[in-house]
Length: 182
Image (cartoon, rainbow, N blue to C red; front, top):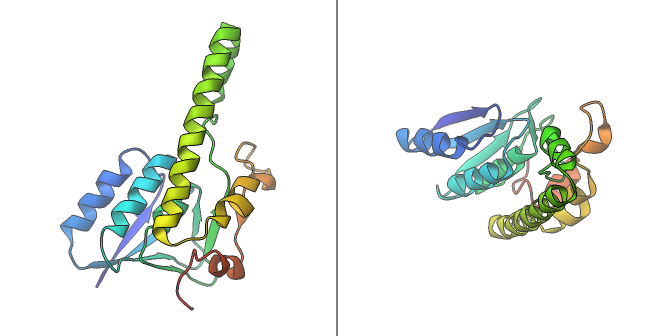
């Protein structure tokens, strides 16, 4: 068995690169993941790609962190393992990370701001629905979204601990994020 190491930002091109890597080596049986996240929809798509390979193992090795969109890549594994010392860190998704877009909209006036808010609300509702569907399909408790992820604000500074939450060893089992015993 070979191991695919997936590290770095999750961007719109990541799912295609992941699929290419998995198709190029049929001996890959495990994907080790380390990422601070990125594009939420790309994370969901990459998770679905991993799930399309029956029996594929995803792992967060000791001292590695899987955060944000990385969570959904990891949860795509048929068998999911967080090593002791591995970190599954979560927060609620956001569409307002690019502050310049928000500032420009406000400067353009009420109509532009109202339009932007409407677009963000619609996109957020769709992504929340996609996330919920994803968790159901992957066999993960939907309570992970409502009790944990959606309780942690996504916008803040890197030094602000309220913008991230690390699941405990008990929580990764409670929510079925990790579905095997250590």
